Structure formats: structure tokens, C-alpha cells
Length: 275
Image (cartoon, rainbow, N blue to C red; front, side):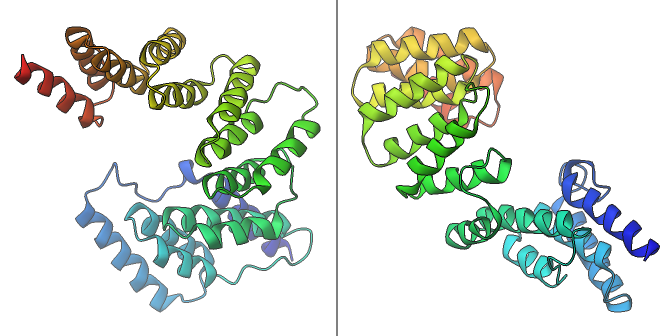
């Protein structure tokens, strides 16, 4: 029994601290190295087929390699059950990891089903917010009820996430008036909530209110000057207003802050060519 408890503690740590796990990450290895690591884990499992920690390391490596469906299958093969109270945390972490992999695999339906299995609607937890987010992204009207419950359960009355997710839901069903109300409420609760500025700005941009949208992005930039997306969308507003030189500068700043934002570089180059 003592050894079992030690194992469960170790497994819990592995599930809850993915970022600190000792498996080799994609930043440290090339894709070829990841494939070698996968082969190594599979070969080891042939010798130790019931080694749970070895299986979980394989799950993490499959995730790093972008092979999410295989990772889900391997995770499920660990046969982690609810068991007694000692194992409950391990089981919940397993379900949350399963949800994460399903989302990455694009299987939103089963991700929602997994979350619904263990999340209490309205709970202010990471899993609860994930469920609300998936509801919002899939235009599920349950979003509103679950977020209202979260607001009711929020003793501080300052958590911006429920209002933000309600805004995302309204945005996705094209009810921009209500979406703006929720994003404004979110910003009122937390003026540093950058995603709310971005969504608010996108609505104004879609409504061709380019000057108003640019003002929103300026506020976001004041909150975080290195926020590349805000510079990029400010550039789009400036370009729509005919301010090409200013737009070019905004695009260049966006790319300078985030080299993966190649769309910003292309936009800046396009303006240069046209001039």
C-alpha cells in the first residue's frame, strides 16, 4: 500500500506539472529526434508493457510530435479509473489531459463530453472555464447559464473570464451589441485583459468603425506595448483609413514583437511595393 501511494503521488505530479516534466521537448530536439524518442519509448514498453509512467512519457512525446489522436489512445490505455479518494486527483488530471489532447486533435465534441463528465457547471476552475470556452466556440447557448453561475460563485466579483466567454459566445452568433457589452464589462473588471480589447476592436473593425477600433487597440498597446496583435490590428485600421505610412510602421512593430506574425511582415511589404 505504501508503494502504491508513492506511485500515485508521483503520477499526480506528472499530470499536474507537464511544463516541468523531464521528457524532451520540441524546443530541445528536432522532429527526427522526437521520432527516435518515440521509438525508444515503444521499445521500452515492449519490455515493460505495464509501466504507467513510461506510457505517460510516451503520451507527452506524442503530444510534442503533434500526434494527438495517438496520444489520446495511449492515455486511455493506461486504464486510470476513479478508484478511491486517494486516486481521485490522478483521475481528474487524466480527464483534463484527455480533454487537452482532444481539443488539439480537433475533436471538440468528445472534449466537451469529457469535461461534462467531471465538471460541475459554474465552477470557477480551469476545467470549468475550458468547458465554458468550448460551449462559446461551438455556439452552445449553455454558455450563458454556465457563465452566469460562475459570476454568482465569484466572491470577489472581479473575475473577468465569465463575461469574456459570454462575449465570445455572442460574437460567434453575430450578436455584436451584446458581445460589446460583455467585453466592456470584462475590461471594467480587469483593464489588463488584452483579449477583451482585441475582440472589441474586431467587432468595431467589422462594423467599419475603424477610428473607434484603432482607439481600442491604442489602449491595449498602452497596457502592453509589446502586444504584437494590437499593433497589427491598429495597422489594419490605419490602412483602412488611408494612413498607409502609419499602417506600415504598425505592421513593422507587430512583426518586430512577434516574428511568427508573418502576416504583419507581408502587409508592411505590400505597402512598400505599392508606394
